[in-house]
Length: 159
Image (tube, rainbow, N blue to C red; front, side, top):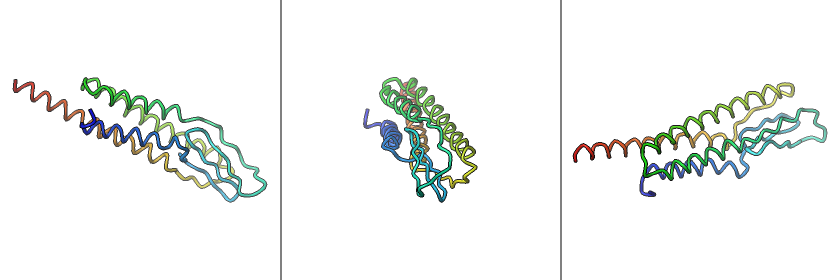
């Protein structure tokens, strides 16, 4: 199982999805008065001055999307004996992660509109980039499964 390249790609994708659960920022909003960091667990406000009359962002935990993606990747990785099923689950995982990334982008836009009164600087964080990079590695894993299916089909024709 571990010698197959798609398993390595799926493991890298699982690690890339698990690292932001350590508390990395998905995105942050900052101005001269305060900084708000949005993570997978919610958000936290860091005040630079003593008085802040800005808005507190709604607390939306995005970690359920991340945990579901990790679980789907784990199931995909463990279904290595059934290549058709592995490819279907991998394709579903890519679609799920794309939809999750779109949800994160919509939340970024909604938060920026919500905070437009205080005109913050919007900065995507490391967690956002790691989440996006995991999609690429899932696509690499799916291409490896596709190559294995093609190889096994050609071997079956030779028999």
